[in-house]
Picture 1 (cartoon, rainbow, N blue to C red):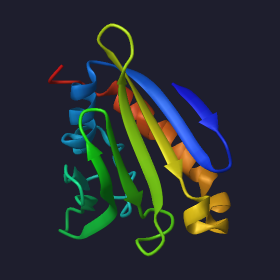
Picture 2 (picture 1 turned 135 degrees about the horizontal axis):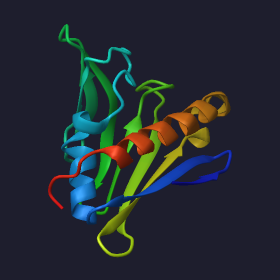
Picture 3 (picture 1 turned 45 degrees about the vertical axis):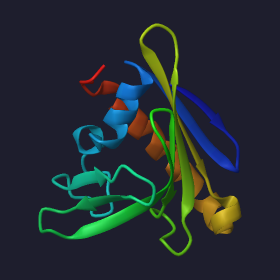
Picture 4 (picture 1 turned 30 degrees about the vertical axis):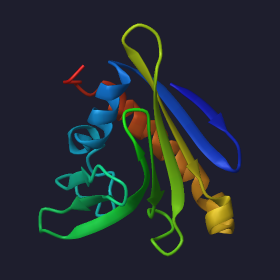
Length: 153
């Protein structure tokens, strides 16, 4: 996994087995199979995580009690290479940050998945407070994604 960090962007990347189509599918359509359990708004490890795969779709969780919590909304959708979303965790829907995820072929049968999380121009001083937490969170999330079984490619 590699990391580049500036005050304006949290950037993390990992190379995983499989083609970009498979990595994109696994990241979006199978999010609940790999997203770190308990790494959610509710903190409940039994929460189910969803990504509605299309422009305007939501990224959200549903707790075992049926409570739905929206984490963000998809603002760009270009499978299998790219999607982006407004991210509400740490700032809220009225002042979201932005996450861009790219899937690029990297060698024989591998894909580089890069996450770039931006926000100082969107949430101001709150970015400086939250960016170290975002950096640690994306590191953990990508490590978890790197360990998942990868059907479809």
